[in-house]
Image (cartoon, rainbow, N blue to C red; front, side, top):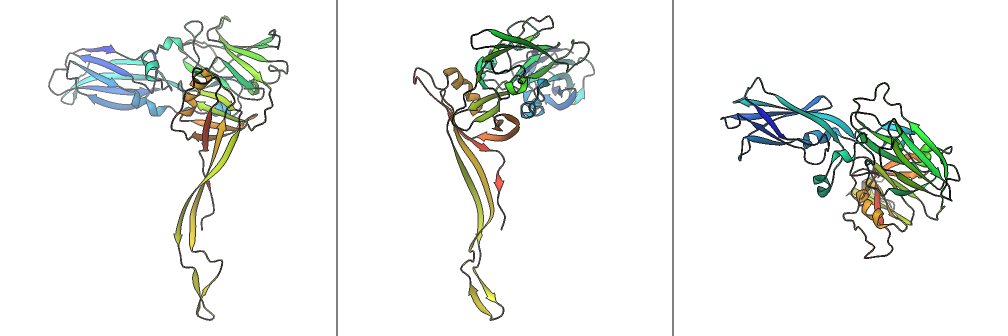
Length: 401
């Protein structure tokens, strides 16, 4: 009686892609054999499954990601509440464990249980990205230039009153600091600011988590993003002040513009929220869905007992009216890199519109209505913009008659 774990997911793996375990057993060829698989999320049993052996060998194949998916529900609260500093990225990352035991004819085999554990995060990678995925690229405690949880360009425009966040993952140890460096128009350094988090007190060992660092000018405040700041950079630091992440540059946009601004926050493929502001023209429309019935337009006058009709009588009655607001919004000129990145916005299942670009607390849920998206290339067009239609996720209702 022996169970062999032939294949398992990486120590950190995207939960919306395959999480395949290949597990062998010396009893697999026995009549009425079953492999019992128990899946735990954050210490809680989620599902117990039983597998027959694979027809081509003495092993089973178990893809467990669908049992873990429902446990992830990333929230926009850090952006929508205008948070500052470091915040826990709730609903993004958790530990899991899978236990494998054997049974014959529904009788458990008492010995030989094998288990495997790791971490999953709320990512849904494209197929080619997933087959090349290496979790060490994202674990900030492993080395320098680790990736953050975004596929956005590493240089971004941001208005001086907007909120934004950068998210990261670390396994087994805290990444305690972020360094913000501000620059003036001449390219000189104005100041450096080290922001330390105290979310976990005591030892930094054995702690695995995903954090948001609130890095927009709104979040950093006027004491850091002063009027002379034209750009600033953000990089994460280890306890010895050595950089452990890639560096992001934010170019402060103070152009007043002539159109209403549409600041959107959207769930990206790596499980956290990116932000982008549409600064072009827009068109607002309303759609109505009506349910009605026909009724008699006359009535009996009880004084004269005559059949009476009024000019204001209603034959068609709309007893239920639902109004949905839509906005067709446009960017100004964008780059090829931005066009590729914003495909994630077009396909995102969770999009939010910050109605007041200078106040993230005024944020509502919207949906993208487009069914297709063109990633534009310079080879086809030298200049291009993007048009999307957003629809309020909460409909408005009229009086019922």
